Image (cartoon, rainbow, N blue to C red; front, top):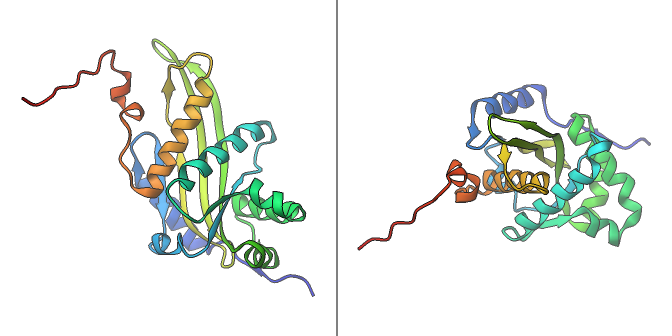
Length: 219
């Protein structure tokens, strides 16, 4: 008997999420769409963080972005696990995880049998797929601009619902020699703030570009 499949998300709901993302962006080039039940669902099962499969040329950058996001979210949430940890314990699940990641990114039907395997073996009920969609440098008026655009979507694998979807695509200047790494780290920090509601650090705001930042102490 072929495995049962469930829809990734109804078309109307997906369209609503897309419109919400366009209408409700966060500062710093980040757009976010979240279902009302996201905050409640987020803590009910283990979240597996998986690099997306969209662009083979950006595979190493996507893998690094997923690692950074795992580290940042793991410091805040108890239920976050990196795909390398799971595949280290169960290497035979690599095709299962890869298939679910491709289906989640492309909006295809999710394989219910694969979802059940992940939940039974590791308690995984959600997959956070991380994908790099921009990786470029260009000259601005006075300096070189670096952009690393990162897309992250949290999918409830048993039901196929997209619970949360965010894109970070900030412009970054500075850090000669490691600008791409610095831009990726800023993008990941913005995604984490979008998920947790934290305030931005000064280094991720326009204040960081000022020549001098003065600190005034009260009398």
